[in-house]
Image 1 (cartoon, rainbow, N blue to C red):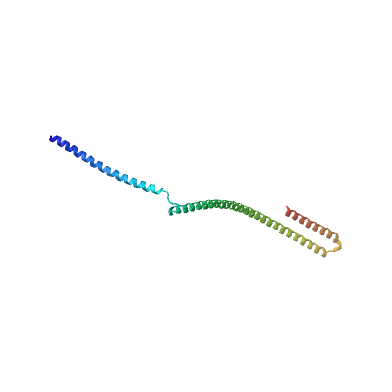
Image 2 (spheres, one colour):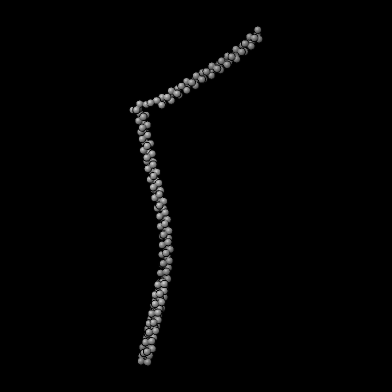
Length: 180
């Protein structure tokens, strides 16, 4: 009997412990249920229809309009940016072509300046030769005048003809070199 009583006492204590644990779980579940019901109520209220003249509806309409306007501006700015980038690229290409053309013209100008300088030197040399030829001719004329003009008359005419022919040949040659 004492053993049965003790066995029943232990069984009762174990059941009391289980009951206490289950009661605590029930309280926790009731708290969770209350919390969920509160969240559901708040959620339902947030999606309930607001009157058309409420401040929130007006604010949402204004924000939607601002978003629409900003989207339009953004699309315009993007297209304008693309146009400007295309224009920049075109101008960049033109600038490169112009730089290349300028370099070409500079090289061509330099070559022409060298050629002009060369031609000027040739002209100067030809003028020097021509001047010497005239000086020789004048010298020969003076020599002829000093001597007896009657004896040497025909020789002077030949010398004049020879000097003039030499001068004309030199002039013709320099002109051909200038043209060539």
